Image (cartoon, rainbow, N blue to C red; front, side, top):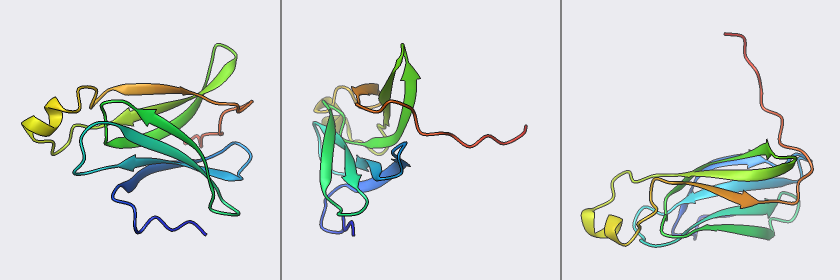
Length: 115
């Protein structure tokens, strides 16, 4: 079981790992400045397996695994929403995209809907 109720950040976006055994969660910290986190948890045990840090950007929003140059990377979006000027000054990379390395061999399949 995964219990994040004591965490000061809140889950803002998540994606299953390609094997369905893990959950990658972007954490949105509404009051902190500085670095943010996107985390990989084991769905069976709830154990924290990996943390991708986003320096200078505490409001992580949406993670996505994509193929890039023959490997799978984690793309993390971040936000500047509701940041005061002083908090934004302490979070110079807020609103940026981050790319993290992974060991996954394939990306998580995305659903396709007809347009």
